Length: 130
Ligand SMILES: [Zn+2]
Image (cartoon, rainbow, N blue to C red; front, side, top):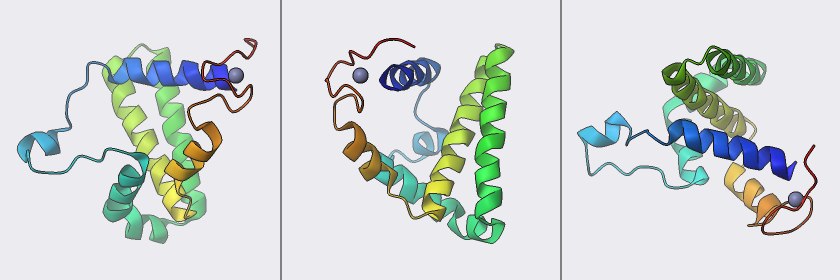
């Protein structure tokens, strides 16, 4: 679990490495860019909350899966720009799902991973590779 999370985190970091500030923040330098999961979740709730409530929880969850498939497709086909956008879409729908379920993702992740592997408990994961 720890290894998988680390690998996925490294992959996401790599995909976004050459990214820059989102355009909305370039247009308005005073705009406050979300700096933690709680703020991102709140931002997506402000943008999509009412629409997602109307959409329904099941459709919201299906959108998460749909976006994950689109990420896989872009990765498989080596379409790097699409991959970046699909990861952003996946993140947005995942945040929407958490909002729908009233799950404070930042707190949940911190409680589970608090600067250590959730499986072996080490700051640097020592779990065997699977
Ligand atoms: Zn570990």
